[in-house]
Length: 85
Image 1: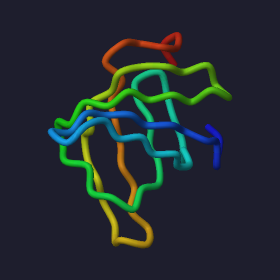
Image 2 (image 1 turned 90 degrees about the vertical axis):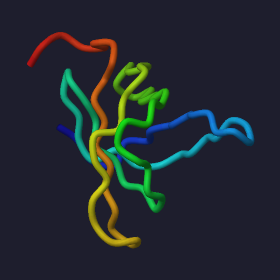
Image 3 (image 1 turned 120 degrees about the horizontal axis):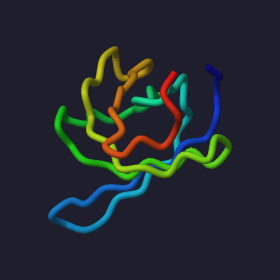
């Protein structure tokens, strides 16, 4: 576990591609939780890059919780980038 590692998120919309730089809160071999101001819907497919941990994976949004100022999103990796815990 770690705090405040930079994570980059990429996804497609009908208008084009989106890119966001945010902060990861924690991760495991199965997924990642990060701070966000947006509301990413469950099921949304993203590309996640967490360079400090060598993680580059597609992921599916599982949940977004909290208020606008303290929102957290959890994603499940679709490819296992790390050995099992």
